[in-house]
Length: 124
Image (cartoon, rainbow, N blue to C red; front, side, top):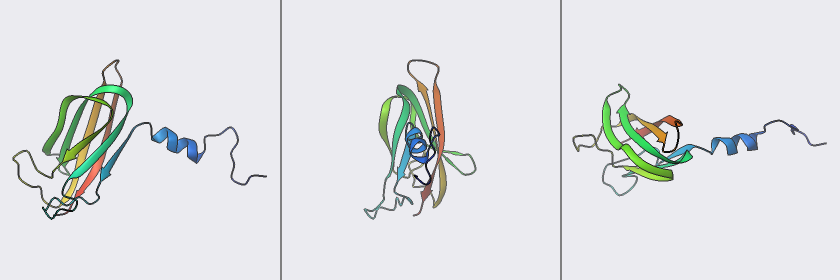
């Protein structure tokens, strides 16, 4: 008798595989763009639910103000990488705080659309 088994039901392993179909990984946490050589750039790795699309990747502050555009209608493949150096639209480093990455991707082949909102923590 196998304790904890759930025959014919979705289990935790299945759920994690399902979740990995589309995901975003942000490192490091927190991100410290202070020029000391450690954690100075924020790396955003994405895995989309379709093979090709057009991506908008925009960073906002918690008040909803647009801080920086990482990608606007850029053609992207299923997996890829974005880099944020911690600067705003004026080229200045942002303040310590919480920022939101809004990723929105339209499929290149049909009407499919995927979006997510991810948190980025900046400590200067």
